Amino acid sequence: MNRSTNWAVAGMAAVALTVAPVPASAADSIGAGLQEVTPGGMFLANIDDDANACRSAAQRITSEAVAREEANQQRFSDEKDALAQLPDQEQAEKDFLALRRAHRWEQDLADRQLAGCNDAADTVVNGAADERDLFRLRVTSWLDAPATATARLTTSGRVRLFVKRARWEVADVLTAAELRRGVDLGLEGTTSCGTGPTGTARRWSP
Image (cartoon, rainbow, N blue to C red; front, side, top):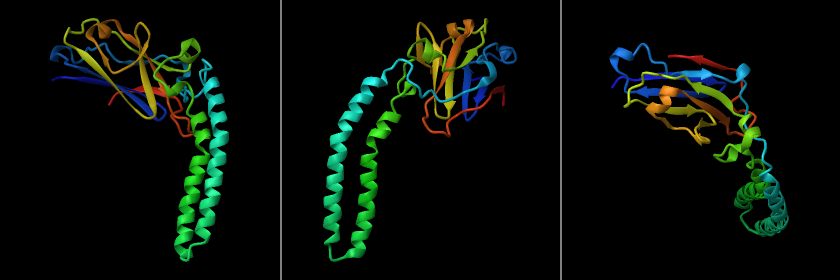
């Protein structure tokens, strides 16, 4: 089966558009490809909260954290005292290090929950403000695409790819009809870490 693959790269993320089947006669004239749309090619993680969806969640998380963290602290203190009474203090020291790691993990739960609440935490483009946070690409039209042609979209990096249909949907496969008219894509950074995909996008072909 003949196939054609185009790539777009944005910082540490990449998008591949693989079209198949491709007739041998059309292998050198396929119009469908990935075209950069976002001016300047800047691509950042989408970790804001444009729809204020996290406001009520933040109130609940912080409210629940108070009692939970107090109980965790008391449990930690009790288990620490119990370890101090064990005859094998070498083993007690090892157990204490594991206890302390678990305790810190539990005490940081609210921080992790709050950090995880952002626009990239779901598979929905939450309105016009959220749409502006997407890195935009376009699949150029292939007017003569055969009825059997489809294209598969794949990504690498901490990203999510949307395709613009009646609304933004998580992208996977494009139909022949979509290849003929061309479609808009939106790439969303999903990491809340400082090492996420950022930088200048460029287009290249292997």
